[in-house]
Every structure is written in C-alpha cells, then in structure tokens.
Length: 321
Image 1 (cartoon, rainbow, N blue to C red):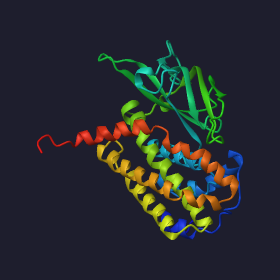
Image 2: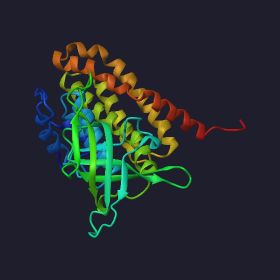
Image 3: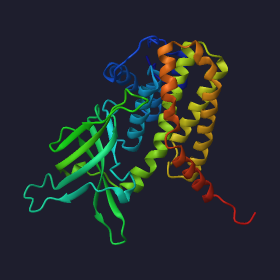
C-alpha cells in the first residue's frame, strides 16, 4: 500500500503487499486490483507505472498505460473509469478519413441536446470495458478545405451507441477491441471538448501513449525482475528508464525535442529487452510464454515513430554548419 509522500520509485522498491504469484486470466479479475492501486496516485504517469507493476501480464500493463495516457490527454477522466479513444474508421485515423458526422439538430426546441452524431469507428481498444468514449467527429469542411474535427466525451450507455466485439488479436489477447456504431446519438454542449480535435487531441496522443504505455510495461518488467531476483543492475535500469519517462510526461508532447528524447529512451528500452532475454528461462512457463507472445506490442507503429523522429530532427537542422 502506498504510504504518504512515497515517490513511485520508492514504492516500487518497497511494495510488499501485492501477491506476485497471483494470476488474473480475465480482465475483470485484474480490474479491482488495478483500480485500488491507481487511486493512490495523482499523476497519470505514476498510475501507468503502478498499474504496470500490479499487472501479471503485458496486456494489463498496456491497459494501465493506455488508460493513463487518456487521463493525461483528457484531465476530466477520473482514474476509476475505463475509457476508449474512438478515432479510426475504415480509411484509417487521418483527419481526412474521419466521416463520423456531428450535425446540429434542426428545429430543436429543447436546448439540450443540440447535436446528433452518426458514423462508425473501428479497432476501439478496451471496447468491451469502456464506460466513457472519447469520439472524433467531423463538423464539416472549413473554407480552407480542412476537415473540422470535434472531440466528444460521452458515456457508452447513451442511446444510439452500439459496440460490436472484434476478433481478438494474436497477442495481448486479454485486451478487447471493437467496432462502434453511432446512430442518431444525441450530443449535448457539455459533451463537446474545447480546442481543435486533431491538433489538440489526436496528434499529440501518439506521443503521450508511447510514454505512458512504455512506462507501464517497464513497471511490469520491474515486477518480474524483482520477483525472480534478476540482477540489481537490471532493476536499476528499469528505474532509470521510468525516471526518464516520468520527466518526458511533464513536457509538451507537441515539442519536437520531446520526440528526440523519447526516441532515445525507446532505444534504451529495446536494448534492455534484449539484455533480459536469457533471464526469462527461469520464469514460470505461463508468464514466460505470454511475454514471448506479447512483446510484439512494442514494435507496433515503429514506422510512424521513426517518421516523427526524423521530422523532429529536421526542426533543429543547422542550415550553415
């Protein structure tokens, strides 16, 4: 249990109350442990790390990091709520591809609701568990030809919202994904989030997600390293990486310099994963096999990260050397 004034690093080193031998084959079995743990931490990055530490597999560590990244992006989200970001459609997640519409209700005599949302989203992470949905919708095309994206914070049980489960992925199988159908969903003014839906939410989310999910997975690896008595040098390396991710989480994710530093920390994370490979042979078979299956998660969106990193370096290119 967290003590008053504990830092997350100190807590990792001293936490004795979790049962490291307990397993949670279903998300709903792990969820109470996760929620009980993260409520003690105010900062989403610390919730990501603590959630990863109490996870018994990568899938749940990813969930802890994903939820923390949403709480960072949308500060109004409470830590006891499971949420989902709903952006991607049939053509992908680029603003030009978003066809889900948000239109004024004509001849509306009641001041609430005043909007109606229609569309279809796909590949929604935590679709089966989410009680809050953060949905990207189009308000139409601006005079300069841009698709005007509005972010909407709405509860899943609002009429007109249907979630259809998708087939599980070949890895992190405990994480649910789904398709979201939106048919004449009533939207109130209070559901509309301020700012530009793309520039203020969708674009920075990938950086925020990389930071928080990676921190959660390192939190999980520290748990395994501690449980199986891996060398102190490996545990210290985990703590060093966590310190880096915590520092980056406090920076502006739109700053190109953040992408440069993040690229370096992610490279160090990849090196650590290579270093610890021999140590998995002594880990309980179920845990070891799950890690072998799920570490593929770390390579998702690698190409997009490399493009962001190259673009970041170009911002600081010296013209006259």
